[in-house]
Image 1 (tube, rainbow, N blue to C red):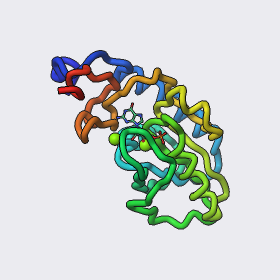
Image 2 (image 1 turned 120 degrees about the vertical axis):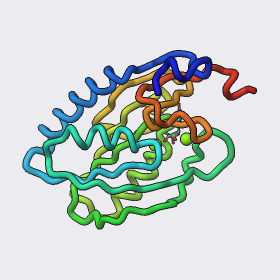
Image 3 (image 1 turned 90 degrees about the horizontal axis):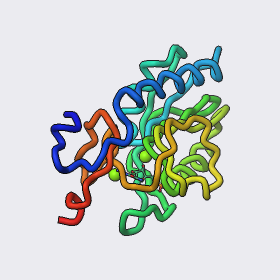
Length: 184
Ligand code: 5GP
Ligand code: MG
Ligand code: MG
């Protein structure tokens, strides 16, 4: 599926597949250098991080393991409450592990902030974060994100793992939706 196939659902392409790939090459090189000689446990946050996890992991030369968590924010509406429920926990024991959380997007930062505190109670050697996208609101929360793909405006985006009502996750690019999609 490409931008043309989305027809009038798409307002504009924010990041092309090529831009995403180029940035992932850079991030992977940086991660390989930072973790040289160590083994990393990549922790993907379902479902949005599936694309970035797959594309980042295959660019790394480090020995890595991949594990997954699914979480959901309590509270109504589209904004995070910061109260998080674990829907699927990790299979891995984090004791002594170098954990790299892989995220699709950080908006308020509340979900990530909760996740960091939770994983840090499990005895890891280190916990860092890599996110494909970050919105300005995230800057207000004191979470240290070591690897950021792109800082983007506050508009609601879809594609490359991100959904609107579970759709558009499969788009290979990141785009904004036309308002009629969510107002009709
Ligand atoms: P927060 O950082 O506010 O706690 O929540 C981050 C989560 O909100 C993301 O994992 C994602 O599920 C959702 N989210 C935030 N901004 C967007 C966006 O622009 N588009 C989509 N599809 N989801 C978003
Ligand atoms: Mg996420
Ligand atoms: Mg979603």
